[in-house]
Length: 123
Image 1 (cartoon, helix red, strand yellow):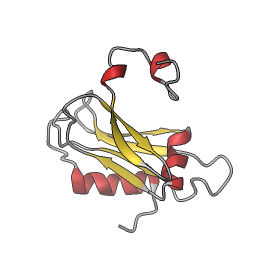
Image 2: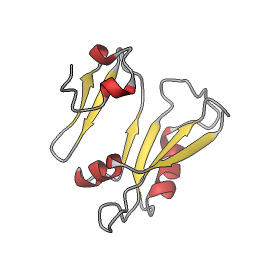
Image 3: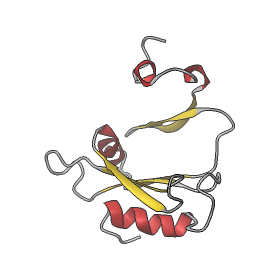
C-alpha cells in the first residue's frame, strides 16, 4: 500500500478492514495504529495515529499520540498494526524488535493504570 503514512495510511487501512456503516462495538471493527514516515528518523518525531469507529459519534475517527509506541513500531519494522476480532479473555500486546505477541492479562483485570504499567515488577 503506497500511502505516505500516519493519517493517510490509517484511513486507507480502515477502508480496507473497517466498516463505516457497521456497529462500533462489533468485534470485527478494527483498531488501526500507524506511524508517519519520519518516526524515529528525525529527533522528536514519535507520533502514532489510531483510526477507529467511534462509539461516541458512530463515525470514523482518529486520534494522535506521542510516546514510545510509534518508536516501538518503527524499530519492529512496522508501519501499521491492525487489531481485529475479540480475545476470549483480557490480553495485552508486547511489541518490540524481537517479539510481537499477545499475553494473558487476567491477572491485571480490575487494577488501575498505576498498577498495570510495565515492567509489572510489583505484581
